[in-house]
Length: 293
Image 1 (cartoon, helix red, strand yellow):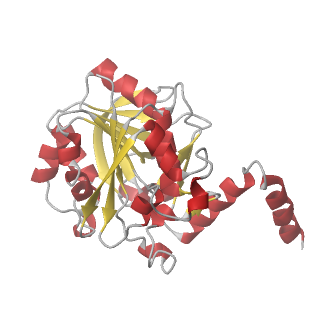
Image 2: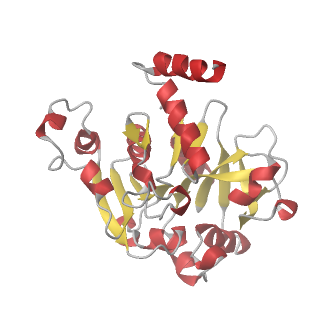
């Protein structure tokens, strides 16, 4: 079965980015000309997904308004190629579900259970933008191929990070030596381990393919780190129950940008500004002037 559905969790508080996240979700922070969540939706539409569900938080309608033709000055709709709503109206259907309280990624996914139904689906974090994934052969498409080829219950996108960074991510233990492999079977996964206890430097990258089985595990998983329901904990229970979980490496040229803190956001904004076809060169010249001065 071709995967057609994706869930985009976008209900985090963005506390480390306060006060710019006081009245807007961090997923709506601009990276160059477009908000982060817009770039995530573009990635999923480019991978052929046609049904998207964005999980938002209470009282923050900015994401929903962004993809709505009815909001914003009329002039914004003059050019469909640049109007955000055209992205989803022409290529995909987007629905929204609310997570009233920030109780973790796992709880956010449970909110989308009715949307998913009995189909396999993609999970793409709304505050993690991955570039270099253009079709054919983009990251999500490779993950889907691995899911079909192995018949597994989940595929997790991963990348190698510096050991000093492992405590910021979910970290996986491979079965066998993954060196030189595009994908491998997962022996274990742990959420944000201390550096000295990390089983590897292979970190979860914010893209997943799941079978609906994950919802049963989420319902049976107790709150974990930070008192929140962690998706990583549910995946770990699956692995320990000998359910089949695989990992797919990001390729050279694919790069992940995240909005976890202000330094990460600043780097991401600069990257997308430098790569803007109209102003990128001017931005580069300005930065060189600043550094030279």
